[in-house]
Length: 126
Image (cartoon, rainbow, N blue to C red):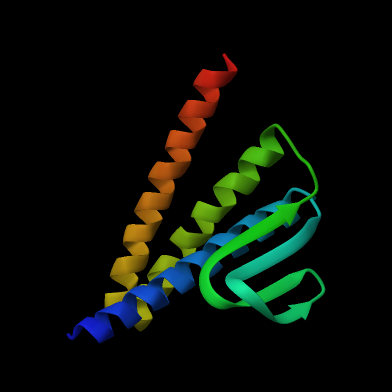
């Protein structure tokens, strides 16, 4: 595999991981009754805007903005992002094992990051 092909696979993996992550946040918010104010997928200039959805040029970032929440609903919404990635990973793996391997790595890193953030937040709040 050439360097260019590898770069394309990694970019596709990141794009799919980000999309599934943000969809996970949005679905979790919906499930706990929290209104999504904006769903932004990508970085850079807006290509498409439909209601709360903003689709941007470069698919390497995203964000879901909700109304202000705290407690268990905040935790569920945070967990939804990683959960969305773990749900998407086997589907991506079936379509392309190469892309799936990179998405798996991003799932693991996202899970570790979430656990670390929860531990730090808990130690700070004590």
